[in-house]
Image (cartoon, rainbow, N blue to C red):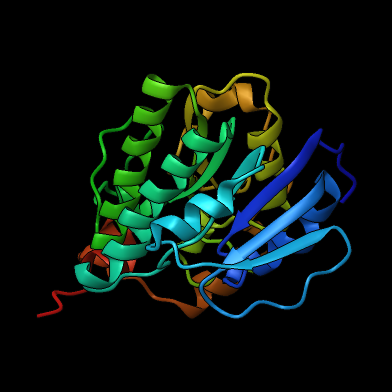
Amino acid sequence: MSLAVPHLRRLLLTGAAGGLGRVLRPRLKGWCETLRVSDIAELDAAAPGEEVVRADLADKAAVMALLEGVDAVVHLGGVSTEHAFETILPANIVGTYHVYEGARRAGTKRIVFASSNHVTGFYKQSETITPQALPRPDTYYGLSKAFGENLAQFYFDRYGVETVSLRIGSSFPAPRGRRGLSSYLSYDDLERLVRAALTAPVVGHTVAYGVSANRSLWYDNRIASHLGYVPQDSSEPWRAELEAREVVDPKDPVAQHQGGAFITMGPFD
């Protein structure tokens, strides 16, 4: 894809070793003078124009150093699926606080926060909701992302750090199952969305759902139209195959709720 380049000196990508981090890392390199990539896991060596900093988000001192000299952050770091609360807590809750506190201290102006559609996973698939819908998390994971959104609002109101919280749907090369017909976000649309979140002139704290232009959508993103995100892709090419392959029981709670299988995960005692 050809995209205009934002005027950023140093852009930080956390969670760079994760699934979406690996997708975005090469795509973000042209958007800034220096791309700083970080993860708790081992990362590939720095390419030209990159800095590689291995850091644990739960380590406050490490994160404070990580944010030094950073103009903007694409914050993907953390546990990306459901686990026991004790597993979610260090990276997703404590770690996200560290990122925001580091941004405040460093004077970082904007954060793109990878939230999740699981913040509102207990809404029914028969409902269409907006980014202003009351959070109804379906998991500890979804709960941690709701915390991150509240943290973003606090740091904007108190300190002026702008955030776009992206309630990312299902971002894979192709939709995985019938639920993905509504929640699918292509990699190219993910890039378009992150670019819009970084470059929109004024965002305050904006919440937007990260989905492609799917025919069957549960989300109305018009309130976030000031971001300028215009999805170009759709789950429609996979519809016939997925509907033929996957029979849905309408009485199954997994098929009734937007969070899908997440609503039945756990408990973990």
